[in-house]
Amino acid sequence: MTSVRIPNTRCRAAFSRCDITPPVGIYHRMWGAALHDKATGVHRPLEANLLWLESVSGGISSSQVIISLDHCILDTAEIRVIRQSIEAATGVAYDNILITLSHTHGSGWMSRSRSHFPGGELIAPYLDGLVLVLTELAVKTRIKITDANIVYSAGSCQLAAHRDFFDIEQKRFVCGFNPGGEADNTLTIGSVTDKSGKVLGTIVNYACHPTTLAWENTLISPDWVGAMREVIEQNGGGLCLFLQGASGDLGPREGFVGDTEVADRNGRQVGYSALSILSTSPPPETSYDYDGAVTSGTQIGTWKYNSLNQESVRQAEKWHWEDLVVELPYRHDLPTIEQTTSEHEYWQMQEEKAREAGDELQVRDCRAEVEQRTRQLTRLKALVPGRVYPLTVRIGIAGDAIWVFTPGELYQIFQKTLRKRFSAYPVIITTLTNDWQPGYIPAASSFGYGIYQDVIAATAPGCLEILIESISRRLCVILDGQK
View (tube, one colour):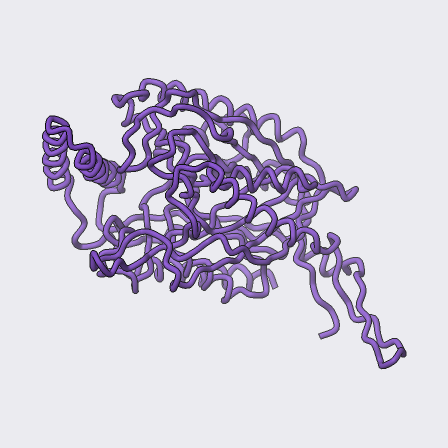
């Protein structure tokens, strides 16, 4: 091999951002063990970061609008309204609008179903305003679109750790740092520049739950994602768009705390890891070619960057986006709404008894049990009726890169397998896109051990593997057709 191809996407692009921080006092409780309900302050602002992409030839039909929101989960109906509003205001097709979540657990649960809780009266006005703000952001971004290039690079960051740990004393799995578990630490970066070489923004694709802050935290926070963006943007990276990878079994090594400094420290770790990758990012629209031998103390092989040839330029301009619907069977032992409602009522009564007895620890535990059933009811009521869940995957071929957007929370083996199978391409994997349902989709090998993600999963063992095979086969067809 005498030439190394630098992965590029030639396109048109624009970045924008806006503040989407909820008001202090809004319902904030995200954790079953939390004893507070309302947010008492703000650690860092929550953000909406928008990336507008178009093919080189432009045109609204090729436009892809990607919005990353600092929220943990949003109801299906809320995301649908946002996409519909942006479609009406910009003309971008509904399917081409991708709303993805950073998944910070410090944002609170913004669901209208929680309006009856303390601070919940602020949720509906906030969500109504969010639609307007994001629609306005999209309209403003469109007029900024310019010719651009994305250069892809990859490295690693050690923040993410396996989070299924077996507690020997309790003889059960807990959700927490597992020092013996494997963790995918791949950090994929896209540096977006205009024709003059000016940096427009940086795409950061990394898989790690933003769960540094947990039940002791009462502040609205983007968790580690906020400090990560700050590091990149203060060091010449332009606006930073974070895309959450397949982190179903991955979380920060140090997490589940109340100290915001730990979240910032975690974020700086990812930010500086990203900067180390960016610092060696090659020039856009180039290849790295062998330039022959030079006689010195020995024969020295020299390499240099050259401009792309016409064939490579055409490759970098490829543009294909489509939806793939994959039917995932529900598990046979999925709890019923009636069963879960009964359990919910039981734990509510136990919580009331604990309050009367003044047992704060028991109150916390009972509230956690109530919260688990509340969430299970939310999941069950939101699932599509029938025997299978029709999961919509967005697949994109943008120049030399593969982009995959999925709903739900997937285990790391999803991205590891796709990246291995399509190793000739940068592969951007983004979860929690356009829906958080059907929730966790664990690897088949993790079922049956009482692991949290397995216990609450709605789809059957083997569904992650079905999803991997379906996407792989479709990508092969698309890529073969482009040769």
